[in-house]
Image 1 (tube, rainbow, N blue to C red):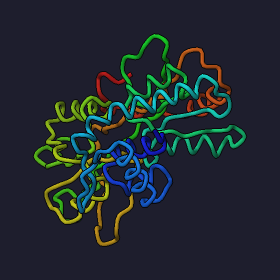
Image 2 (cartoon, one colour; image 1 turned 180 degrees about the vertical axis):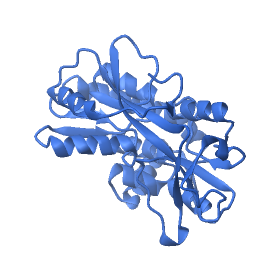
Image 3 (cartoon, rainbow, N blue to C red; image 1 turned 90 degrees about the vertical axis):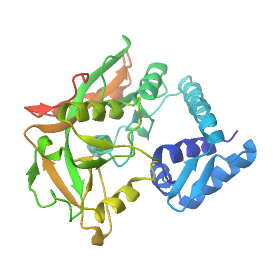
Length: 300
């Protein structure tokens, strides 16, 4: 089985759209479509139902997904058994804050060979760290296995993202209390993930209405929805890289009193002596914690 095709399938599921998967994999959208089509032909089933706004998993796709992830983990374990060379670090998504942190490390230490990977959730990332297929991962973490260590590296403030017609669009700063009663659209939340746990506790503590229902067609579809709505907003990390058409006129509004932060930690296997990992840990010691901020009780 073509592992590149399997990897592309998983990326398409996690991104929500072939276009977003192409960005994450640094290939063309046509290449994504060809790989998925070849995989479907090899399996003899349809994995996705194509729609005008994205791709939705079929029943066969849902059944194949956990096995495809296990195939990729098995391949990573095989490589780890003979691997030497670059330090391998998981950044969750290449448009998110951890990617920027890792990019800063690379720019400061170009002499250190670096390989960037993206894994789905903390469970997968910790498993990959333990088996040695990656050296480290950026995650929001709680309790970890005894053979895994972590250190906090960065508090990323959350922002409200909304269209120009939203009631809070003109505010310089809003409080969590002011968000009550507003529909916060976040279809990318997946139960069982660390970000799912984060937003579940956030909604419970501050009484927020977070709408994660329906399929995730990707970030651009959410931005389209926000631009023409006076009712819907979303939450994004301050370090998330976003772009939208000029006509959307979206607003990023700071949240304070208290500031809501997403706590990023670096996770690695105890005893990993890779010199690149040691350099990365030293580089990340520069971060400062945000005082008087809210973070979930389970986050270490």
